[in-house]
Amino acid sequence: QVQLQQSGPGLVKPSQTLSLTCAISGESVSESNAAWNWIRQSPSRGLEWLGRTYCRTGCTSDYGVSVQGRISIHPDTSKNQFSLQLKSVTPEDTGVYYCARASIMTGQLAFDPWGQGTLVIVSS
Amino acid sequence: DIVMTQSPDSLAVSLGERATINCKSSQSVLYSPNNKNYLAWYQQKPGQPPRLLIYWASTRESGVPDRFSGSGSGTDFTLTISSLQAEDVAVYSCQQYYRIPYTFGQGTNLEIK
Image (cartoon, rainbow over all chains, first blue to last red; front, side, top):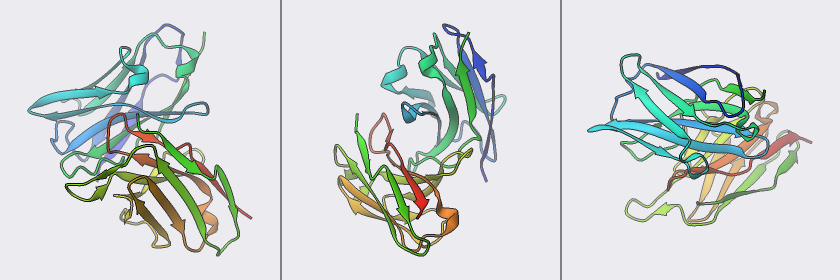
């Protein structure tokens, strides 16, 4: 059974970089069947998919348009986790951030399970 | 992007009664080669992450009570709770995983009448 445990700061200053990690237990981050996603939730934007990383013959990342150019998601095989970095944050980036798994092999890309969520506030 | 629109935004239903939530996508999420709709439903309670209820538009996730069912195809989908229980009070969201960026509906807040 896959479990995801998030960590990272809950307060980030404007213009700085938001960094979160999602530790995986029960499966390898380099497992070719899985895609590892970041999703955020805010009252103004609802649930918003930010991006994903997955590994097949190498690792690839895809990103949402709203954060393109500011975001990077990478696996860390040595720690069996994956990370989110969001640069140049503004108060609009305030929200609850979730990591989540999706199954690539079957094409059943719904998100399950999810991490516990991290409330990130962007404020000076 | 595929826009997901749910109706209604909020819904109050008596215990034991049927609850119906609709979801419409701006483009079809039916993949013809495998005849599958790339549509999921989630339940979210306060302070918790979303919980996957339904995928492929109508397949219940393991452990989900059979009073939850999903239907629809193409662009129009429905989540039905056949007999509302007190523990079903939550926000319900649909999501398409047909095309990146994956997108969610705005959510429907389900309450007890």
